[in-house]
Length: 173
Image (cartoon, rainbow, N blue to C red):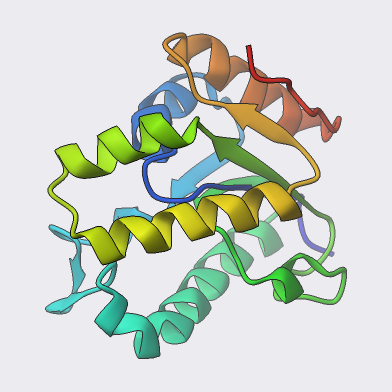
């Protein structure tokens, strides 16, 4: 039996990295991880993970995270993992993760995402991929959290969801 797993997916620019320190401050016994945490300046052992040209190694990177999370969960610790938008088959009950597992989306308006990614200096084709990921996440997500200026409040809502599993669909203000 595994401890519960809550996955907060988000396309690039949704605010996962900004949210992380706020989640960590109030996590209590919940183990909070973000998939970019293993990277050093965007790379893992010299390979730039976010680069679309690295797509052939993404499954291996995902399996690495699956192993790390599984080790923590089998020790009895519930996990909140911030991750990219998965392929639809990963959300299926017999997908990558052992039950109990729940999914939600961290989202932001497209114009905000565009601004954030332009600020990062992303190439147009990378931005287009991120926008497609955001659309896919919106189609898949059973619960949605919208990033906003109240990051501490957002963190509290996400942590409440991760702890009790209550599904929420939060309308954009």
